[in-house]
Length: 96
Image (cartoon, rainbow, N blue to C red; front, side, top):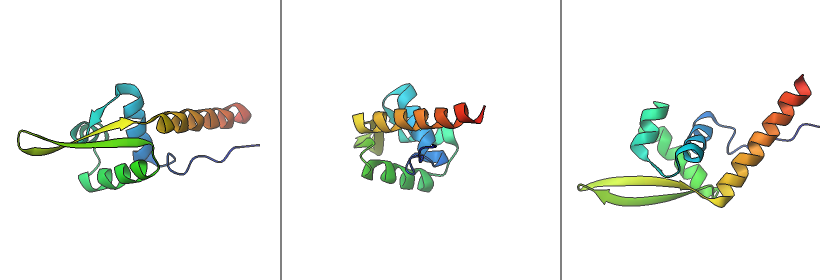
């Protein structure tokens, strides 16, 4: 039987953000914008959803008098990502 895919991670931009965090560790907002080419508004909405799910921590500070937003993946986020990847593997394995 196929597992349901996590609806929080089954969004292209949210999955991209979590993947970047898994690869690079802590990242900042401008890095996400550069890598995904998404709009600031869309990134902000997706960050909020990931934060509300407990998958990321959002650290706000000031850098050179400008707001600076950094993200860090939580243990819950790592577990959710790993479970999502395992669920995808089951889809692939059953399809062959």
